[in-house]
Image (cartoon, rainbow, N blue to C red; front, top):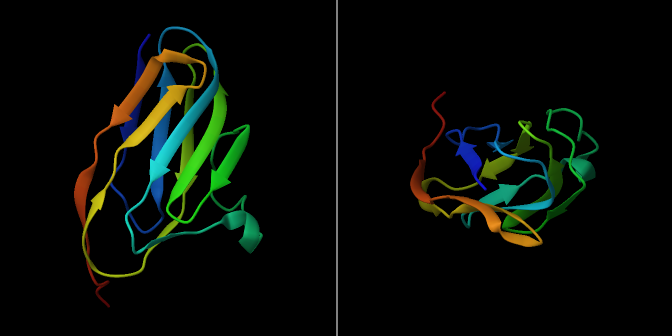
Length: 125
């Protein structure tokens, strides 16, 4: 089984991930996104604007202080995209940890996007 996980560069709008199934459908998939310290995850449900940015449908989303867990199903040849809005509070150099997705009840189905160093710069006026 093979799953493709891609991540666009992080921008002011947050982290957008695209998840694709290439072989067969999978139910009960868990996506784990961990973010560097000093970055705030904006919980749009609490702000009352959760439909402002388009994400594909998910079963459940657990938003913590430093990470977001998204649970969903994926059909054959289906692609889903999830958006997490972030506020990079402090400028500096941070390590953005791995992003990981797996089928919850089949450890043969998994994908990992390696972590990388990112730099937060002061916004020019």
